Image 1 (cartoon, helix red, strand yellow):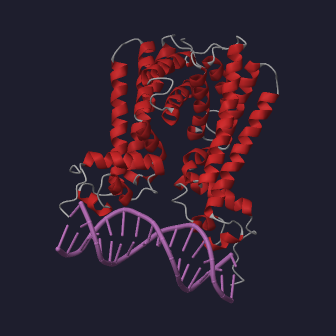
Image 2 (image 1 turned 120 degrees about the horizontal axis):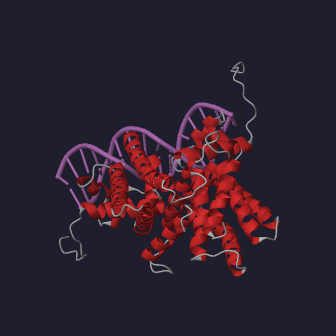
Image 3 (image 1 turned 90 degrees about the vertical axis):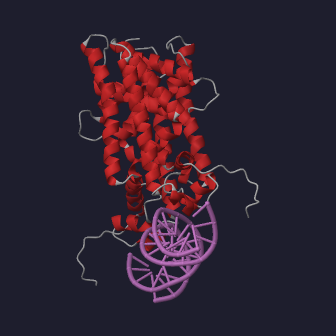
Length: 197
Length: 197
DNA sequence: CCTACCGATCGGTAGG
DNA sequence: CCTACCGATCGGTAGG
């Protein structure tokens, strides 16, 4: 038994989370079994419980990590300048970068929200509203400063956010556009939407 | 037993499909049991098998009906005029109307694609590509005719589609905007995206 | 349209 | 980290 030669590094919690992310994105949370996740890191399902408390825990960790990442990126983008046009442009670029680079997190974050326990779900929903509000505030300020011209702040904000989220659905690495190219072009598109192009 | 007074009309297949749609949208396909669906139409789970062949069948019916609806609406919109600007505008309006009026179908259509059997999934994916192509062709023609000015046909098309899909996530009846108001405003936003505003 | 039930699956625990 | 296993759930069928 001790002679089996399979290269096998010690299982780390981060590997388990990464495997769970891929499986949740591919098959869905409910359809993914602890055995599936174990297989991806070369152990049996029950062995995972030495590293994680539950399957639910894995989902919570994935979602919390990604909302914190995108909120941090957003704050950095907005804090990088005082010009509301540049703020919105950079916020959109950060939004798109996140949704291209973290496609699976974005997927799982929206599609599996309902499988979060009640408390975790409410906390996540609140964080997501914070994020949306960040964009709405920028659009509002741009309008107030006479820089943007929009039909409806709310609809324009949703449009900007939703088109960026869409990137996570169709983006594939190594195709026509790089992440940065897409980010810049979506920045341009957002400027058009707010009438500042 | 025969004296129980509960108002109960005969169970129709359409009622079952409608109940399944609501449950699939709310809890997800896998988390919805045949007993859940039965309860919604006042029968036990096993009784449903007199009307439907399987739970999978319900999902297929929901998805096929909605893709056919949106494709039909799209063809009517595009066929209503020869002006490519008006064609795109009306196509966007139809797209948005569908995603506002058929929120749940839109939800289930994208979120539960992976729970379709292999064959049904491939057929659905093909229909969805047809739909996308309809928009891409309009954007291309507008550019060729010198009416639109875009950075990338592909990214602009995705943006237009994705922001419309987003309506199904946040739209609620009886709030700030009616379905038609949203449709018109999204038509305006699409015109801005293609540089024809 | 119902009850009883089969067969399979799965999260998590016991106890090494 | 593993095997054995519990308890619960669920789609679908049998047979009225």
